[in-house]
Length: 275
Ligand code: KIV
Ligand code: NA
Image (tube, rainbow, N blue to C red; front, side, top):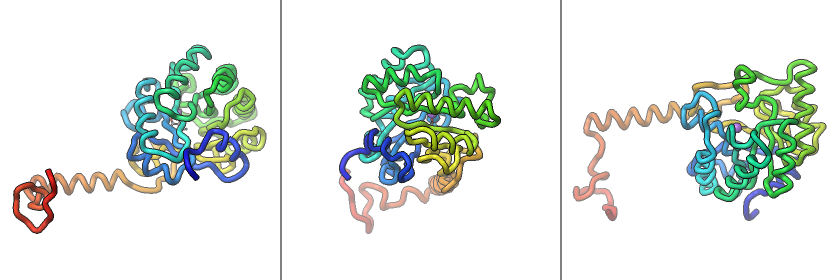
């Protein structure tokens, strides 16, 4: 198939083949993920994962645009969605449109994601009716860490379950093309997935969802400041980096590196490369 997976194509995947999604922040990582993923999410989790911030709250629109451009350069098949960072959309639907249209125009990404349920329905409708496809994000919303008092799983108990289900129905009705459900109990994620007609993308929301997303650095063992229960580690690249850099450091200290073949103007068996 030529060209990127489109928003309508993703939406049409509801109830069929699971949607594969991972986060991407950089060009080289996007290149690796692009051949396997339907969707690459430039998540504001980059504030914590790449910049070492304590939360996602200080991430800016300019940061999202720069990383969004890098991910677009590194990918050619996946649908790329960029997060709207905290403070760039909650004030009004007009503010949300200004931010989102700038992100779409400057990065070339296909859609934006924003955190919020029923309270953001008006904003989601405003954007999606004006050419900005919106992915919603409900359940655990990291941008609300201060009102929620930490990163806690959602949907426990009848009232909490009802809230997440109502949020899902509201964002779907408002025109979101898909919704991320984060850190939410299985029964609720299942009920939502069976109830709404747009694909649900789960992160800590069970296998019942129409697709899955995780933070790439979490599954590769490249970020260990905070590892939620829902992360599965598929590799330990952090250890591989430590080992490689340790070897480099000792070879520099022992004058083993660089060897003749890495040097210019030193006769050796290796081929001379143009300068
Ligand atoms: O910022 C992020 O990476 C996200 C996903 C993990 C859903 O919002
Ligand atoms: Na996010």
